[in-house]
Image 1 (tube, rainbow, N blue to C red):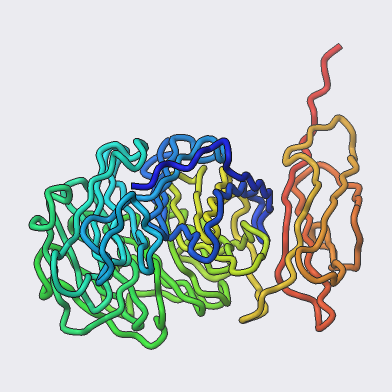
Image 2 (image 1 turned 90 degrees about the vertical axis):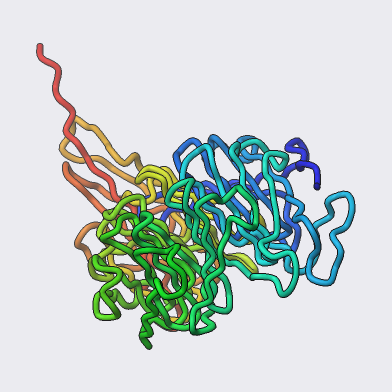
Length: 460
């Protein structure tokens, strides 16, 4: 087992990036990078006081204060028992071997978590923030080909459902009891299942790379208890979230799909097209009225009406574009906290992930866009005894130097430069800015909303 990384030697990267179409700000914490193998692949936060992230090299990180920066997180590397395919498990806990990845984690409460690996390993703990020593592991199958698990969902400590490549559904009603307590159901089709969400023991939904949605109301009932729905518009889907038995949301690089009747077949899934041109890798919903997704550019797409049209999804570039940027997991225990994880062992957090409400989400399909970052802005609530106040915004581009177009409220977009000042009156206001792409105005808008409130005059 590899020792915990010393926090004193850790690197801290703090990035405050306002939403490209939301007012939320994201704080980003980076652990010491392990190059191309340094990935967080999933995260689960059963409450605002516990988050667990997992990733490559069998990495696991936990925090009881997820917004507290690098000092509030502990990270280590678990050691899978047995062997890695044909490679014997090395002594001393060196897990830097091809394929050593914890792909999914689920914590039904703060006292129990389950993690599954690409090499068929299952880890459980009753002390999720206790470090690597608090986790116990075993392999699902002691011989034969590994079961490549890619996701797990535990609606309670007495039921966990995992999905694997090859159309396998793995379930247990006693997850910590060892490999004999887990059952493997082989679906008739060898589907490439990537994600699963169980709203309760009576509803589980899985998605995959095959353009399929797989559902069950009795997930432990074997292969026959699962229904496979094929739909061309589904294409590749990697994440799904079901905050209740009556609502689920998933998506891909073409659209977001939602349903208030998840077992009702392909026609029960509504489509919101054009939300993002990049593959959506994970979803999580704080409730049926607040859902978030991430993509492989470390963007966060969020909605306070996830069953609504595309315009009800806001767009935030949580981490400015860097080489091989991407987010692969997101968890929102409440509407006041979302945690996203991804490449370079990055953890991004926001305490206002749904703050801006509906906004247009025009994108330049398939392209990484010039991104504008607002670096200075007024308070969100300005109290004044005057009729007018002066506000000022500072901003810069992330990427190519393309210039800016700005507007306030219902004005038209006009060329602008930083800083940009306005004289505003009492009421609600919205400042919007976008890159002035030489090939035509880029349609990705960064916005900041604020309100000017009259200050009560003191009585004489």
